[in-house]
Structures are given as C-alpha cells and as structure tokens.
Amino acid sequence: MIRRIAAASTLCALVGLCAACGDDGGGGPGGGVFTSGFAFIRDDTLDVYVADSSDYSTVTRLTSNGGNHHPSLSADGGQVVFVHANAAGVFSLMTVATDGSGAPRTLYTAEASRGERNFKNPVFSPDGATVVFAYEILTTSYLAKVKALDGSGFTSLTTGPLSHGTPSFYPASLAPDEILTASGNGIGQYTQLEQINVTTGQVLPVTNDLGPEVDVISGRAVLSEDGTSLAFEGRQSGTSAIRIFVYTIASGQTVRISEPGAGSTDALHTFPTWVSSAQVAFVSDEGGAHQVYVQRATGAPGTGSLTLPSADQPWFGP
Image (tube, rainbow, N blue to C red; front, side, top):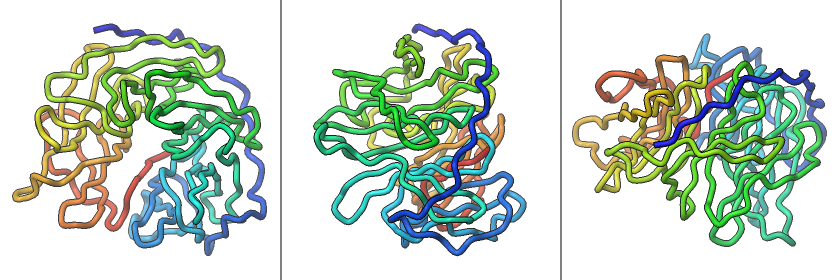
C-alpha cells in the first residue's frame, strides 16, 4: 500500500460567485435562510432541494427544470453546483443559490466535438473559485475543472487510459489545490486512490489496497472535513451488494459502516457524505424508496437512523 498527503499550502483568496442569471434552468419558489444541512434530489421531480439542519422537515426547492443530479455545496453554503441533463441528453453543470434567490445558471455545457457526456459528481474547490467534475468519453471517465465564476477554462485533469471517478478536495488548511479520487480500469470499477494537484496536474498514488471486504469503489468517495478519512460506496467482496465504507488514510485501514435492516439484504447503500467527523450520511433504497440515513463512522456497522425521507444523492455542508 502507498500513502501520501500533500504538504499544506497557502489558502487562495476567496472568489465570490456571480449572482444567478436568467437561464434555461428555471427557478424554484425561493425559501428561507440555509446555514448548514443537505442539498439533495427527489426522485419524483429530479430537482434540487435543500434542508437546513435546524429543521429537516422544512425543505426548500431550488430548481424546477428537472433532469438534475449530483448536487454539492460550496464551502460557504451559499451555492449548489449540480449536473443537468436536458431532454436531448445534453449534459451541463449548473449552479443555484441556496437561499432560493434567482434562477439557476448554466456554468458549462458538454462539448459535442469532444464527445463529452454523463457529467457526474461536481465539487467546488475550498476557495469557491473552481469546480472539478467527472465526465465520460466513450468508455472512459475523466476529471476536468472549470472556473466557478463563469465556466471558462475547461482543463482535463486526467488523460486515460484509467478511468477516474468522483473527485473530493482536501481541506484548505491541508492542501487546497489537491483532490483525492478513485481510479481503475473501467467506469464504476475503481480499485485504487490517487491524489491530483488541480493546478499542476501532478498525480500521486495513495493506495491500491481498499481492504478485504471491497471489490471496487462503485460511486461516490468523499473526504472528511479534516482530510483524514474517506467515506465511499463500494461493492462488497464476492457479492452484488453496495455498502458504505470508511478508509483511514494514516493507517490504511478500511471498515464497513453500513448494514441493511432485517430482510433487506438486497438493498443498495450509496452517496455517502460526512455530517460530522464522527458521522456519515448515506442513501438506502430499503423499502423501495430512497431515504437518507446517518450512521457513525467507527465501530460495528449499523442500519443508521432515518434523517431525511424521500431524498436521494445528498450532500451535507458546508
């Protein structure tokens, strides 16, 4: 196993995001103050919502255009970046304010001449200046970055032949220009972790040992707020089950933290997101509906406690 953490570097100056402009996205009804909580998708609308941790029963709808996926929050909690797919199957990155003001705006649209499609997992850099996301060309998944201000400066961070999945930024105090990402020989078949500098493009191996319970990382992998641990969804060894695991970078140890309820062994557990340094939220489809559960990040695996009903693809922040 190989492990490396980049040296801490100077935090970049904060860059403010421009206000939401009129766009093809369509606005939501507006809402109250969002301080900290979940951005998420609902299956019936495929729109973006937020729920503040002060009252998860009060939900604010931020979009009404449908076709939205993979929302994540900026470090200040003021913006959501998400993927939009229109009726023709053209993918875009969009942003919207969490207070419900203004319409969503398009940040970047797939370049047909390059064959870009299937955008996934966009994330803001700690300073809010950059968005890094995954996209596919043919049978390979790549990572790219654009400026969060106006979507300019598209730069591919990976070149193949390995596929790269979900990016996750290290905390600003540790390595503000570095992401941790999963990579492997196929899309959704990620067998190792790499650290990539989004400024220089330098790639460093982190580990190729995901632990005996994990065949592959199948989807989202996200660093804890302090950058010491990675929560990810992975296929459990020798089965088709998707469960949530936590990898501790310093020790190189991986533990499974999610367990299906009685009679729900075929349930899928996906989209982990850190609620605190000790807790991870994730989606379970037990009972036929997507719901968000919160489970401790250490100790014996559990079923978690239901926290946000009728919600999918959650991201907790800031």
